[in-house]
Length: 168
Ligand SMILES: Cc1cc2nc3c(=O)[nH]c(=O)nc-3n(C[C@H](O)[C@H](O)[C@H](O)COP(=O)(O)O)c2cc1C
Image 1 (cartoon, rainbow, N blue to C red):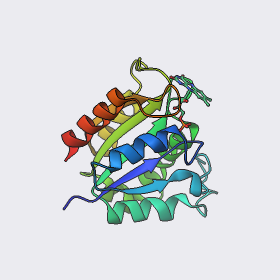
Image 2 (cartoon, rainbow, N blue to C red; image 1 turned 180 degrees about the vertical axis):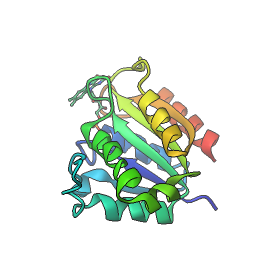
Image 3 (tube, protein in one colour; image 1 turned 120 degrees about the vertical axis):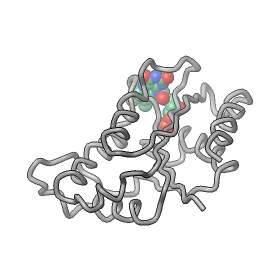
């Protein structure tokens, strides 16, 4: 059976993106990793940060899961800094942790974002899709969602449920 992990990259652990992820998890069997709970510092060319939480985390992800779904709020028309730092650190898997980089190849990667508006940001998912391609991962799709007030609107629930059934 495919083992799926959702990587939550919001500045609010229990915020809107989390609400969307929770809705997705009603339809999709997946574990959740909140990147906020880890100390992951920005990419360092000299790898002086190799002792932070990134390498143990990515090794565990590479060992335990076949499918990764990254979940990010829309912050200034792009992914959160939390998720971007995570992506930047994947460079460690190309440079100092190549074995883990090789393990990522062939895994699946999907993405979701949560903004405050129904209108999607153009090309929002392009960096994620191109990163998947570069890493040899299979890009399995993405979904734009939004929460304009506090609760998930019914049409957004339908969008998430459709995304889940596309993955199942
Ligand atoms: C720093 C920041 C930048 C934002 N930029 C955008 C944006 O460009 N487009 C948008 O639709 N919403 C934007 N928003 C609103 C959030 O995307 C929206 O409230 C989202 O649901 C928040 O999810 P969160 O609770 O997981 O952080 C921004 C919010 C913040 C805090």
